[in-house]
Image 1 (tube, rainbow, N blue to C red):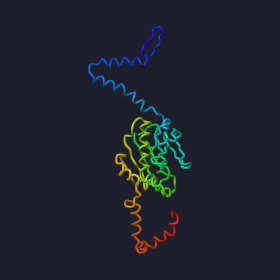
Image 2: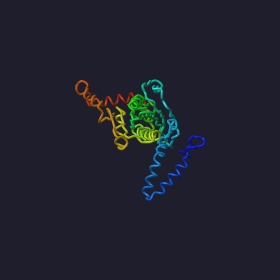
Image 3: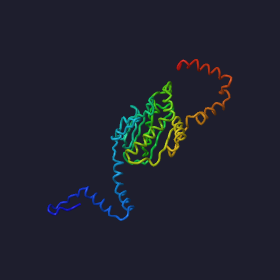
Image 4: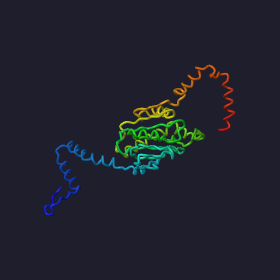
Length: 279
């Protein structure tokens, strides 16, 4: 900064002159390591500013061949109506990002990533879906957000009420099984880095029933993806606590037990009632 004595006011020295002066001084240093060290310090604030310069709305332009950001908007009212009916309250201000992912030609994976605009705890929480999925778990997203997490959820690649979506669509079955959750997590981490200028310090999965199954599959297939997995009551026939409860309830009452000799009759009854539904 220089003083204009005639006018009695301050005028700013152009930044190009300041930068030129600094570079000249660095060049005059006797050793190459010293020059490189000072140059790296000079670059740090510029790099940090560029990395964290994105706004919420600008995330809508972050498209890739297989990911489309359909909405990126700030929600600052403290309330949010999810799916046209569920009213969520007490929410901190956040950046709501809605994406659609198409890892295959037959994939249509929906996901939402909610990014706190203040007091982010530097962590990602990915939440699972129950049953056959088919909808965003807004309640779990909101709870994660209230706790300071950047939170993400997916519809598992469909919007059906049951499992009919897999008929004739093997890629959609893979999306439901594990790919939708993986693709969602990758996109959430990409958006976090774009908005905050850094990756999450820790990433966690939390889900129950179908979400517990999803958590186990993510841990098995992508062990580096999460730092911790909460897999509550996973919907897995061999590990399902619900199935164990059914077995306990069945065998404690001998009259409730179905003997093996009746299995063929039950099998035939199920086929007669349901087989025409799928040809």
